Image 1 (spheres, one colour):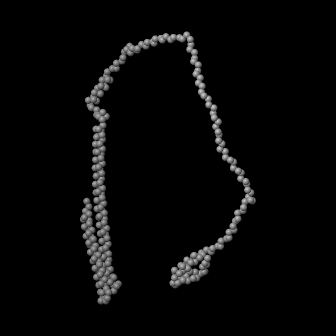
Image 2 (tube, helix red, strand yellow):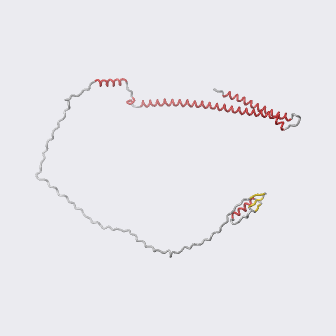
Image 3 (cartoon, rainbow, N blue to C red):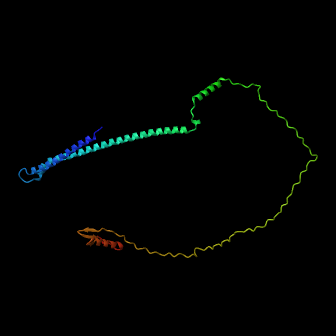
Length: 275
């Protein structure tokens, strides 16, 4: 198993070394610039101080670079540890789900056995070996015994049918005459006349056709042509040396120029002067 604590300790030591290098480089840059500026017995010079502080600046930049590498290493260690913890959690969940599935199978088996025990015994009763052996012996015995055929003369006696006795029918000397039909007289009613109502509407009177000449002619009012309105030509307000101009008209302020343009827009018959 990887030791993430040891890796973190190593990166902490490297981070401390990087900070030490940064501090040493800053000190060297400050002292080198001061010494280089006053080395020849004269006042500090900007170019000489910069050249004297350059090694210290380079060393400090290397320290910053080492510190960035240390931080990246720490981040990689943290991500690796987090990934390992996630894998362990996944394994634990897999074990738990496997146990649940096994328990579900056991529960299903026990439920099936319980249902089988609750069913009627005639359907779920297992065959005993004694009953099986008795059935086998009875089948073999039935096969071994020959079949007894009934004798040919031993036919069942059929019952004898007796004839019915004849019944004497007396004949009448005179044939019976048919009875006359019964006539029924029904009262006859004469139908009353029914008044038929006719729903005929009176014919409309024919309209008298009037000639077109007799109709009054419509007076068409002659319309005068409307005067053509000249289109409104818009121009821009120009500013030059603090003076606002619109065409050839100048104004001291932009507000006055806008009021003038608005007044021209209200009255479309006003013609703008040419610029």
